[in-house]
Length: 51
Image: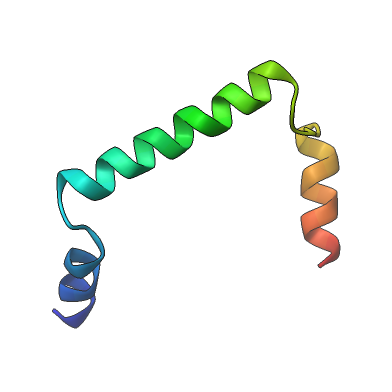
């Protein structure tokens, strides 16, 4: 019950969903334009595993 209430408190409805969509679109645009560095999955996975 407490976890459910906490999860509900994180989302303020359409505002939060809209903000996430805008953020994802911004990041996707950066990747497509080549303005941010990317790495393949194996490299990223290895980097995260070393942490």
